Length: 252
Image (cartoon, rainbow, N blue to C red; front, top):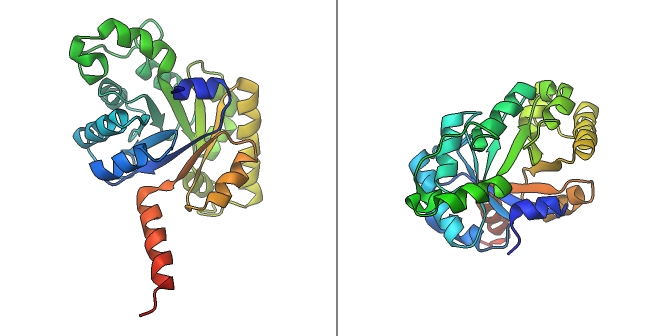
């Protein structure tokens, strides 16, 4: 199986989704459904680290690629998620070069970064320390979220930081920072998208975006518009959408 990192290097399109509901069963279903990666969402959910570790395990053991969106650019939380076996980290609200440098430092061991080394699941509880140390050099995924006007203003500096693999546009936060929350087709929003796409191409960063509605036509549209990494909705939205559509078609 081609690793997510190698898919990025080959400029292949990848599709993932957020898991916000703590359910081992849902995580297993999604991990086996063909998605390139599953994002465990700590930022906008009630999940804690212990629950995230459970989902990392089941996604990993089911053949999926577990990424974790942490609550913030917090080196302690990043370290714990990676120690648990997450293949990568998604960090919200990266607004400047300093934020990006901190993110890279938190994800990698010295000399590349300053991540502390401990014995836990990722390194086989100490039985595969050297293997994991070598693995993380080439395989850890770091995705930054671009979701503010400030981030767009600093986009070239952010993307110039070595160690960032890709970015995801956070549409709600970005639109809110433009004074038009939830409006994704404004001239200002579209200009921000173009600015990020141009900077990503220049710096060889994988461009990504979150599509809120579970609509496969939108996925195809954005893949055709230079995006290479798409977050397909979120678990509860997919469930709500299916229930709503079914209910409309039921005669009662």
